[in-house]
Image (tube, rainbow, N blue to C red):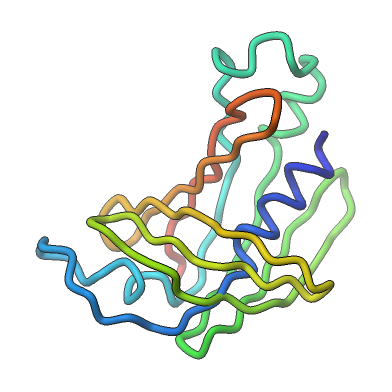
Length: 148
């Protein structure tokens, strides 16, 4: 399950940035313009939604997950972190699909060829979260804050 979540997060962030200049009607730049930069993320588990589909140990493992991610304007992405005391680093690409308000949808292009559509919800210019769902439950979200 943890590997699935990590893969989902990785897939969700190995995304593409064919920067779009569509306005979102607020004082903030459009989401596609807010994404480039370095980010630090933590897992926030929705324990109510998870219910008994995960064990307390699995929930604790998820809550310890942290990762760094960097998106470039050119569409490259690097994801890094530590999971179960094992460091990992993965490179990929992302492509713009759409944006509406503070929601950005991108396509993640993983180095192994896997492609996934990813939804990113911004909270201002320096925070966003990415909802994580499985076939079993709404797990919660990875929440990210801008480092630079």
